[in-house]
Length: 117
Image (cartoon, rainbow, N blue to C red):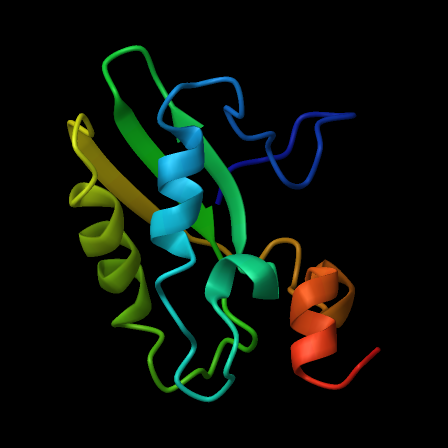
């Protein structure tokens, strides 16, 4: 486990200014938690989308709970969705439970869909 640097954010910022960023977000929105009828991006399970100059994508994600029945499969679903984007050279999906996911990480759309608004 890597030590967090003092003052470093728990969730690393995404590369939102990269030309592929919006496509990666859209790809992530095609992946759903089988137990919840909302895509994993709007659920807040995608913490960081990092894209370098070689169009290599690193996605840091979590699950709603560590014991999620699809824990072993979901990173591959995300990798498959992102790898299908034209121009993406490589995809690495990393799982983390720091910080732990909470309902406050959901988008307004997800809260509305699930009846929390």
